[in-house]
Image 1 (spheres, rainbow, N blue to C red):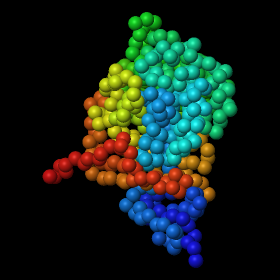
Image 2: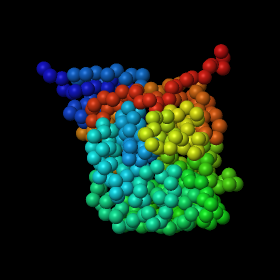
Image 3: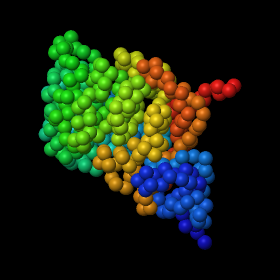
Image 4: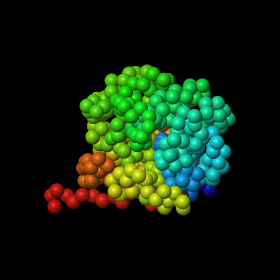
Length: 428
């Protein structure tokens, strides 16, 4: 008699917030879909392959809200999708601003179609997309935003385009004021999709332009342009123009924005600050979702020939280690005191709701795709650092073991995954 299932994940600690599951369960998979979930050992489930995951954390396939995976087209900036996708334990990626209306067809053909990871896009508001833009801020001026072309491309590609990406940061405001943001907000409003907004200085101040712009006024200028469902990114940035003002207080308009239905995403990145995070969290600002924000400027990967030798901001590199993943960002949230169940929400069902992804993702309901992330849940004492030099001692580290993408296994062997080193015991 043939087994009922193709694969059985046996005895793992399943956390699936959308279903209220938190405990040891067996998960059976058939034809790339979730076929059964039962308490561990409660029923005999026969499968052609059995994987014992008793000592691991099992969650719906992780979704990275802030990826940069338009490899080659975006120069050094874009990483290979599966490197930060399935090979890092992440089943789904949302590229933030890599493709534009001009390059979207190439993104579909060379990233979405061939990669093992599931990939969506938040389309760049700028015609140039993410083409080494950090080096060339002049490519991001108002004249480089075409409302009609971007709207047309998004509506014709709704299966992969789920929103738009723009920047509300000091370098751009000093050059051109708010016009880019006004055009970006118009695109998102007319499309009926979310706008994802980068906050925190990105480009250096120019020699020309209104360099008297106060970074603490940027949020209050931008929020009135936005609609419910738009996404404020980088709440914990250490750079000027973020959620925390120069006096160390959270801008009052952040609370107003949340009351109006705007969302908050921790695009972690190398500008993440434990100090700023503590201020925001203590003020009651709880982000909804979480992305890694790894890219070729902050991750140690070979650079394409002909690109600049190094980014002018050397401090972009992650803590001098140049290795990071979405699981690393989850570890940082745990160290800040967020409950595990909420952190799992931030990379699963919350992402589906906030970013407009298909409802079959983010939870392991029977019949849904078997997109599953399996992680080591390490306990001990671990040094956690940010690029400001702040160090926390965390007691818990999440490290990916493998994932299933529609039932197909991928081991977490990416070169960007950090090496986990526990601190010596105090007793020793």
